[in-house]
Image (cartoon, rainbow over all chains, first blue to last red; front, side, top):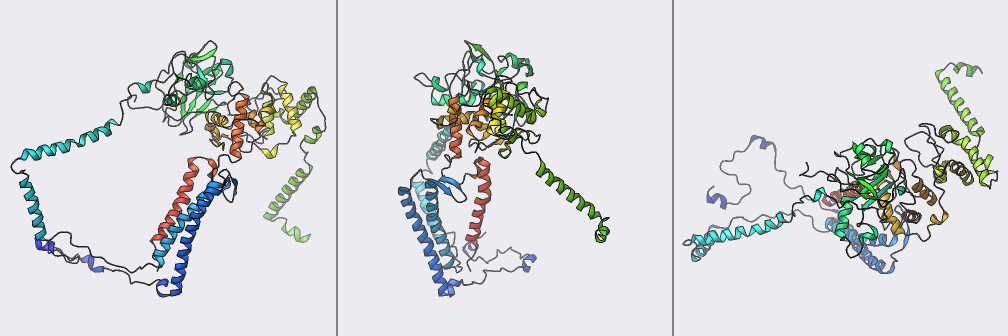
Length: 357
Length: 270
């Protein structure tokens, strides 16, 4: 493109090679529609009415804001009452919400109504200025740049430019490194173990009571956490940190039920339990929700998130839903009258992960 | 007469006749049906245990034996044996209108309008069933009056043991194959207690060793606190059914309002 073509600024000018397509003949640029004045533009009464409406809306907003401040100090935060449609609720929050809504909506609606009725609405075209500067200014700028380049001796000493570029480029790496490093260390074998150890007692969540076999009656279900991570035993100087307790809840939660030993279909399940009392991981093998909906008549264990269903009488095999693996069983036995773990789970609990496949 | 006779072979005549017949039979049945055996027995003033058991046995034979067997020994799939279920189970099942079963189904729903027994009759039935074998007794009033109950502790136990089925706000939830955990709003404290103790239908048992009587009272107090609005801190609860209800509201009403506002903003005033 030659320079004089760039310099000419005319939105309707056509390039020399442009051929008018035939189809375009059928259409004409409709341009802007004719301006139609609004009622408030021609009728002074309408304008006054619009003004009143806008001032009323802004006035409402002022009332809402003042009402909020008054209610904040005067209404008892415990006040409860029946509100139409909503029901019996805490009135304090309802009043604060309504006054704040009035204050914000008043500003918003007022501003929009003002703009639509009273502010000018004539169509205005504002031409864009030329994007390119004129020849003289561009030559001058190039001259300044060239002058700087030479006075910094870059034309004679190119290594300056190369090393400066390299230093600045490499400087971006530590930033990227922090992002990559923030992904954390690799989990190692942490995902394969829980806090369960040999001899650890099973404790009722949340009371932290140790469990004897007699306490587990037929048809009952007990939510269990490992000893030392629940109730009294989790407090004290040597107790686990809050983070460790949270992690134990997340990966070591166990569901304890007593089944009729004759109903149990798997010999391994019978061997790992005590007289039909069996303990299974509560963490779903699909995406790790707590599986806890135990139907005591069907012995089905249902996960509330995606309806995976496990058969407790058949080693917690999946009988419905997206889970692909049975729930891992915690081997238990009796020691000093209490139910204790024989060992950690034999397989990783919870959902699949990359290394496990 | 002759006018009627001309219509008597019309196809409509059959329908009219059928309608009249059914209406008459239905009305007559409603008028003449034996009222619930309630009145017959409530007069008996049985104060001693033996009398209660005997009266309960009569009630049982009249109302329950067809499914549970004459000696409550059970009858296959029709009804389980009641030996050892205890008085608490009777108090819960009959007191909430679940039993006698209105219709066969996956689950016996609560039916407060169909509790056809007085509390005295329920107690007599319970005494009879309790005499069949040792089982949990009806809850002590000490643990259902909700005095000195720890609501926060009850909430903790509820969230661990109950919330997965009954919903964190005790609004009930779905189980498998049409079964469901019922809404707990408006349930009598003693019935909630008995349900925890006996584990009706799909519900597991929470005996006194795993959740102590005091803890059970705490749980009930927590549920009653929700019912009394203890959890409603302003705004509509949208059924308290969790994110689904909130999402439906915001996707229909909320986005609808936003679209309306956008249309209003974009439209020319003139």
